[in-house]
Length: 231
Image (cartoon, rainbow, N blue to C red; front, side):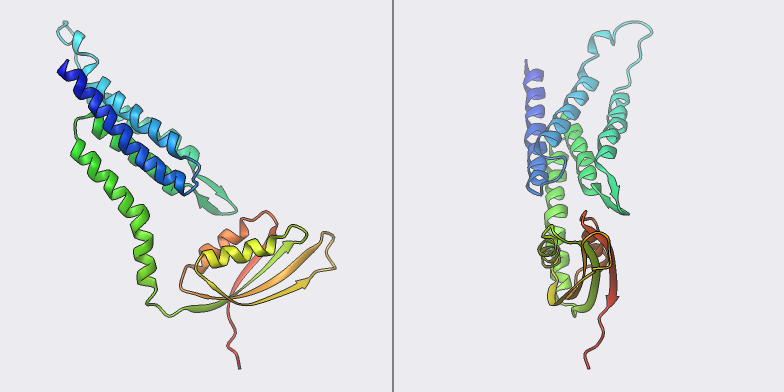
C-alpha cells in the first residue's frame, strides 16, 4: 500500500511539473502546448514506474534477467519522434526547435519523477523557466547598453491584403523603431504589388527580423542594407 501511494505521488508530481511547462508553451502560443507537454510528462513517469516495479513478479524465475535501464533508454529514443515532428523549415527559417527541446525536457522531468528523483525534477523545471523566460529579459537588458544600429529593409509584397501594417507591427514587436516608410506601386507587374522601404533603428538581430518578414505569404522579396548616412 505504501509503495502504491508513493507511485501515485510521483505521478502527481509529474502531472504538476509537466502542466507548468506546458502552460508556459501554451502562453507563447506554440504548436505543442498544455496537453501535449502534460501527457508527455505523465507518460514518461508511468513508463519509469513500470520499468522499476512492473516486472517484480518474474524476477524470481530461472533464466530471467532484468535491466530497468532498457525502458528508460527507449523513452529517450521514442520522444525524438514527437520532437522531430515539431521542427519544420519554411523559407530557410527553422521553427520549433525550442518547443521540441521543451518536449524533451518535459520527458526528462517525468522520468525523474517516476524514478524517485523529485528534487532533480523540481530543479529542472525551475531551470526551464529561468532559460525560457529569464534569458530573453537578460539579453534585452544587456543589449540596452549597445548603441542602436540604423538599416533599411526593402521588401516587395502583394497589395490588397492589408499586409503593410502587419509587417510594421512585426518590426516594432521585434524591438525596432521605424524612422521612415516609403511605398511605391509596381504597375509593371501582372499581380498588384508594391515595394516598401522601411528605415529602422534598433539593437535586435536584423537577420531574424528579415527572416520573419519573409515568412509572410504576401511577401515576395526582402533585402537588408545598411542605411545611407544623411547629408
